Amino acid sequence: MLVAVAGGTGLVGAKVVERLRARGDDVVILARSAGVDLTTGAGLADALEGVDVVIDTTSIVAKKPAEYVAFFRAVAEHLQQAGAAAGARRIVTLSIVGIDGLGGGPFAHYDGKRAQEAATEAGSVPTSILRATQFHGFAGQLIDWVAKGGVLPCPKQPVQTVDVDAVADQLVAMAHEETTEQHVRRDLAGPEKSLLADRARAIAKARGQRLWVAPVWLPGATAKKIRSGVLQAPAGAVIDGGTFEVWLAREYPVS
Ligand SMILES: NC(=O)c1ccc[n+]([C@@H]2O[C@H](COP(=O)([O-])OP(=O)(O)OC[C@H]3O[C@@H](n4cnc5c(N)ncnc54)[C@H](OP(=O)(O)O)[C@@H]3O)[C@@H](O)[C@H]2O)c1
Image (cartoon, rainbow, N blue to C red; front, side):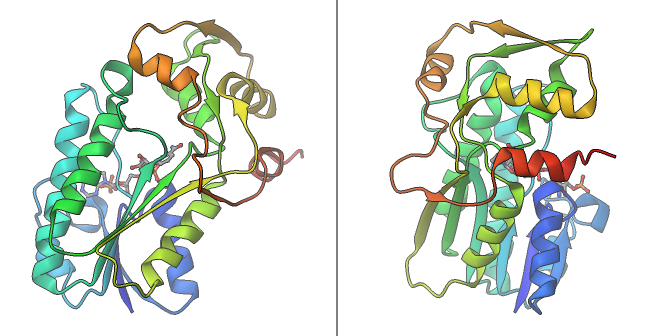
């Protein structure tokens, strides 16, 4: 099977590529560093020649909130149009658990993901959307993006983080699934409920990083919904992957 992995050089994408190759699939990577710009569609038609399935694991860290919707919608529309022209049988897209009704300001990434889901399902190529919870390493990304002067302002945020390896496994399984359904949707979460602040403290400690995790109370409807636990596994979610502690020991081995 020939699988195109959009974002195949990224954190999730590289793990997806590794797994596809290990099971004998042919892979083409769609990324700017591989000569394909998915926001303009440049290089896409040639790259998708003969493709069976497309897996979308693209992402950006935007400077302005509005960029998220523009990016994710454009990528999804280009993959649908070029995928249909190439005769792809399915597009598998990675999204995020619980994002309905969330967005704006610091949560604009979620607006982008909903726009991506909608644009993906609006096309003619059948789709499978995997909504995963935050990865075990998400609090580490947050530290890198937000912490200043040894302080991380951290909202009270219940999470149920998942090992990124389980996310890659599930995306590959969905790409290989035989189904006649036009739109498949699945939720994936890790095995334990926790608080984002506790994850941040554990990652900072494992990194040997001095960090004070300062509790913050964010106003607004999105923050309120997140405090109620909507980012944790919904009913019917697949629970998979190792625990946070196992991931932490693997990621930051004690020398
Ligand atoms: N972090 C979490 O906790 C979490 C949880 C659930 C779901 N997710 C979702 O997981 C997805 C993947 O995240 P990640 O951390 O693996 O992303 P990442 O490491 O930042 O990788 C992003 C990928 O997108 C590619 N890309 C960016 N702009 C592009 C463009 N214009 N054209 C083509 N390719 C482009 C990048 O390659 P080039 O730079 O070479 O173009 C790279 O391969 C995201 O959509 C995110 O919403 C994340």
